Image 1 (spheres, rainbow, N blue to C red):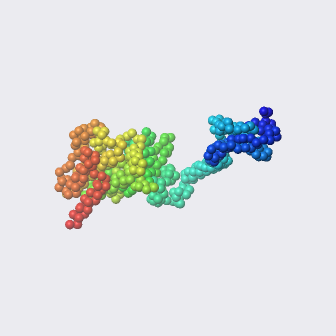
Image 2: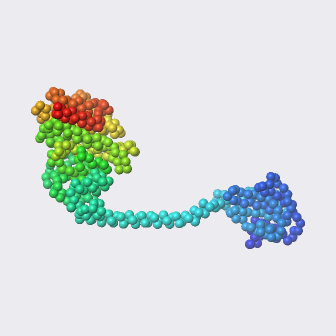
Image 3: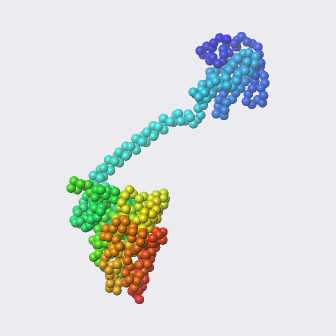
Length: 505
């Protein structure tokens, strides 16, 4: 045998050179996928072939007749899909195996035939196009974000000059706080003003006088456009409380007549130091603690105050479902100093720096990252003996109920009955020191299981007697036995109805 020429592949074993010298018929093995068994056929040349298709591998033996047909088949070079072996001896194709022909196919490094399907070809052709399209989209988004950032910085610049640039149709300087807050209730920005407006309002406030001090800092009466506002200035070490209270107040749908009206929050620099401001409605009557020390109340006034606190607590504790809903919120530091008295002698709950939130949708309990706890005098037994279920939101609501019972007791002491009223005293005034320690309160509340003293005169007054029953149901040692805020509100409404009927009769 001689070697193949450069134009005819070696795999045909120089079949063409033998065509002219052989005139007789050869006996060949004949076998196709359709034949039930191998047979014999006669032709000028014998062949074996293998063909790879999407339906599988087809292996075939047979014979070829005619010079043109022999040239056509036997000169075909092996491709990714087909290889053919031709020979010119009796039954020479009978020893050809499938594997020997498969080895003639161009293969991948793993030795398997390379098979390009429609999906593969589409990927090869469309892949670069898709990558280019994605790069184009990313570039456009990046440009838009940069453009948006420039617009936002321009908006903030305009805001500082007094323009709101689309957030509010009128200029801040031409609007009252009531108008701005009415707008914010429908803007979805939480309970306060839109953030850009908050910064503008904060920087236009003049501090007039300090009206209170506490562990967090100071409260000032400020003025903005001739209106009084309250400015709570946190000390720099209490940044977590400021941040948490800002976060809670910006909760959507928090606004309620019995929750202190929040307007703005800002971090500002004054006298070369950073100040953390929280700006709210101003109530000249001050806190319930201050008010009860100055003024004794009539029965109807005391009931209205208690009912308004209960309404605020119900709103806090209740989750509102929907796309713009509100999580359930527990206060965790409810006391008379954190409740303000309005000019209508109703109350609103303030100081949400220790609040916890809970959402049923994801069962997420958010306790914030403020390590402080509530006021020791108002702590529930389970907090004092450290048995509270810190992973259960209802446990925090029950702590609020305990504290509400103590506030109710404070109101009852300053409520007239038959012309008699007690002087103001804080809860457990006669059982613990003025500034009780954690251990002082634990001993009285948990070990001795004492409760605030109830004067005998209260039992002779139907309204005060009903309030005594209510506050005792807030003071159960077992937290799960305490009333809910909604039940307290309904009970107070019932007591108020009975009082009104008594007046009519």
